[in-house]
Length: 261
Image (cartoon, rainbow, N blue to C red; front, top):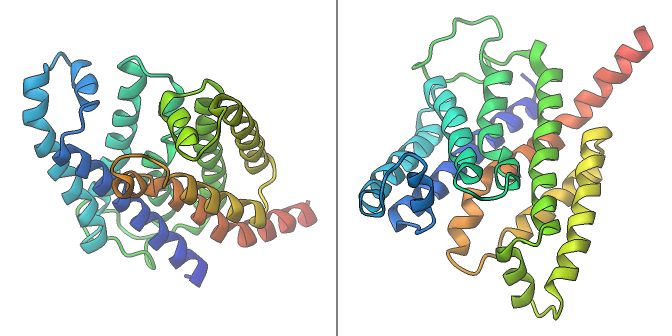
């Protein structure tokens, strides 16, 4: 297992943990908008506020388990739970872009499953993951292609939210002193859409790294609970950084296949 593979593993593991620890923190805080997501299941406000801290605590425990004793059961659950919680946003009436923009939430643990579950060893759901023995080199190209799609989705989703002038983003631009937040949102949306397409078509490391800096910086602009919002987006940073680590090896493998054919 080469150094880059270890970096990808630890990046995705920490990213997935950040996502669910940050998400769980909002459950303990009892974030009001969560009531809309409970309502999808017919759960009223009172019971929603009762359940939020319990779900939040469970999210944090799952996230911490990835840092202390990572198992495939935890990783598999985080894929499902990340996708479900993201999907609850459009199901509760929010734009579908909210789901797309959260591709990193379930994308980071998904790439872990693709890239590190197997590699010739016996697969056990509750055994501690061994990234050296369980690295599946045969799935490397598939994992990188999935990373490209995930990064594309989370960036194009944010671009979409800018183009439809999401209220929260308008507030961010206004707080930065822009007199015409809607105009700024359109410019940022087009810029992010172009970046997303470049990653999907032909990612290059300088652009991917710039995208990482951009994402990590812009996620600090939330007006309330900035730290928890930033932590919750760990899946976004992690998938972008993992792609950056993987690109040199992936590019060489693509060139070798072209030469042999």
